[in-house]
Amino acid sequence: MDGREGRLKDSIRLRLSLWLALAIAAASIAAGAISYGGAFDEANELQDDVLRQVSALVRAQPALAARGARTLASAAADADPESRLVVQFVPGPAGTGALVLPEPLAPGLQTLRVGRGTYRVFVASLADGRRLAVAQDTQVRDEIARDAAWRAVLPLLLLAPLLLLIVAVLVGRAFAPVVRLAGEVHARSDRELHALEARRLPTEILPFVDAINRLLAKVERAMQAQRRFVADAAHELRSPMTALSLQAERLEAAGMSAPARERLGALRQSIERARRLLDQLLGLARAQGGGVDAAAAVSVAAVFRLVLEDMLPLAQARRIDIGIDEACEAWVQGAEFDLVAIVRNLVDNAVRYGGEGARVDLRVREVQEGWVAIEVDDDGAGVAPAERERLLDPFYRVLGSGETGSGLGLSIVAAVVERLGGRIELRDSERFGHGLLVRVLLPRAPAGVR
Image 1 (cartoon, rainbow, N blue to C red):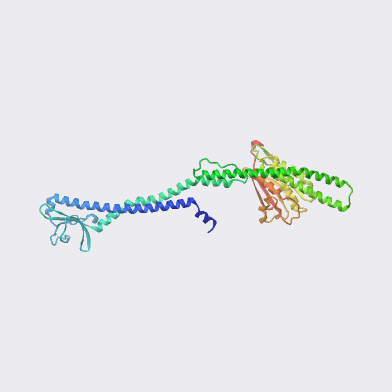
Image 2: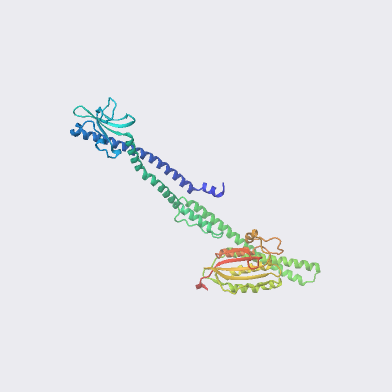
């Protein structure tokens, strides 16, 4: 059984709908059977009353009684066969086509076998002592009774499917708040830990919502403590790292042997990597804990120029051709340091991992209504599709690149982009045919805040 079948089997909504459907079907069948039987018996009783009434009419009309053995069928040969009744004296005169009723006959209603047929017969005594029989074929009676019974049951049969549909709709409406709540929780990011809205929820769901809200509060406190610890630890470590860097610079000015100077160079590189890691940890903490200023807007072109000024020395040292591919202006909603963090880390990754003599292009354009695309495209070795998703994880680095780093650059980008309400895409470079294209989609700033 796959996951979907298991979820359907464990669905309260589905099980409730099925049980209600079975209950309605069983009740409909029972009610239909009872209604059919009751209508059938009532139709037969009505036909018995007709026999009694015809007998009373004949007894009240001496002229009719004087005609002797004569059937209503012969008197109205063109009448509907279902309305045919036989009225005769008992015993009937020979040669008149009367029914040959067995003797003796008791007064009242009875069912008799006559020839090849079965008749329902009402026998009554006249004032002159003769007996009168009014008979009706039971097949005709049963057909009339069945028609009446089906007409009584038919509305119930037609309403049962409609009732099942109404039950399904009502169950769906009853579970709509639960579905809406699940959709709200699913749509949240890992930083949206505010309490769930408890209004307009069924009373049975409120304890579950309260438990979730308490859990969200605990998770938020734990995440805030973790962010504070990372930020405080990184901040506290910056001072000793700065002191170590200064001591290394002073030590370099002192006279020392070539092996000692070589080891000092390695030490300074390690100190620089540690300082860069601390700076990125602080940047990650700010990215995860900051808010979005809805009234702020920043120019992407201005950020491009600022980042290129800072990254140009590193790009020139690696003989990398870096520049803005298309001159286009766009404004995104947010703070300038957020956008600088995004572009700087993307460009830094492209420059460091693109390889010697690579090309890095920066582009910005409005891709659709309300969205701005920022793209950093390089013609380096690229990244395998299986590893692209993991590039956004903290401290993850592609093996075999030969570059030193902390693996936090794209994590900072992903955190800032998510906080700004955007998304990030990693794909093969379409322009160069190889390399990596990183596309960041951010909300466009309204014209009124530029």
